[in-house]
Image 1: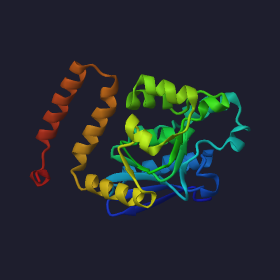
Image 2: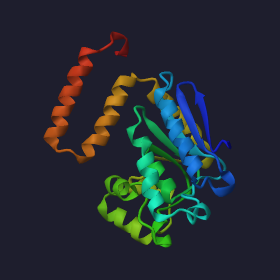
Image 3: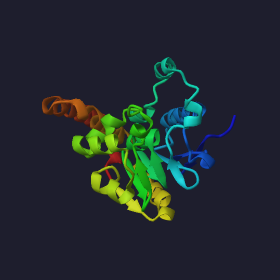
Length: 242
């Protein structure tokens, strides 16, 4: 089977590389399956403390491969997602950093937005793309954009499908750091390594809180934090205090 997602471990960081550079890493079903497998593998490895997702070649991910999508029947999409959901990144127990090394579009953008932190190449082009093809926003992209950039900006970017740059993404709250293209992956790896050096239990709890709190009230969040803190203190390892 072709290695459509490369998996490597550097120190305590798993590096997942989308690997169809001749197609701008456009997603096809086997590639998505390999990506989900890679997330499972990283999550199960106690020696991995953080994960970096990036793309091979000049782009991060150009979205779904439309040459392949033309063969997919309408009912097949729902069946595929029921068999195995495509949002595995959201349930990772470890921090996920996206190293957006170049152009990102459509479903590729959704995968990037599922990360906790995004490093982006200066001048790289971003687009939601869906509206241009008469499609709904895929993989929860509307939900992600509305929460990261706000409802107004989400409406703008999804309805217009306009192209914007990494610098604009930074301004919109969709990227946290922008670096020259050659520095994006090294910077993302350094950041992920720093996270991986922290106690994994706390990172796992905080990531779960951040995701759950998007849809919770203040009281729900507060009391969940109380419960998690109590459990954490009870299991505190003095070697974690550094």
